[in-house]
Length: 69
Image (cartoon, rainbow, N blue to C red; front, side, top):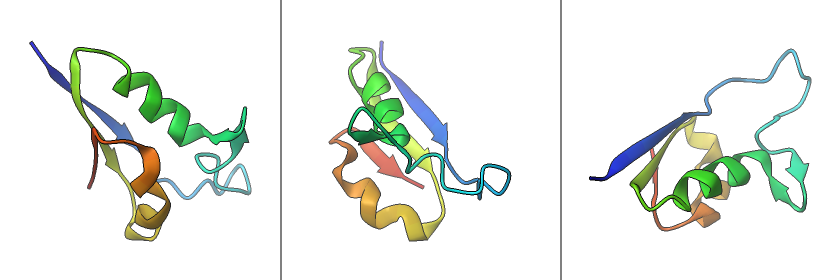
């Protein structure tokens, strides 16, 4: 059986004062780590990231299982 993971990444991060999903941790973005964690699971056939269109450019390199909505 396979599943899809949905990551909601549409917030503006106003309280943080910066885009926390684009923040770096261990050389990669926080969003990259989230996508990678789900993508590495055999049961996950696709990862869906719900995000504003202006983030699409840097999401393209997050992996083959990724779909952007």
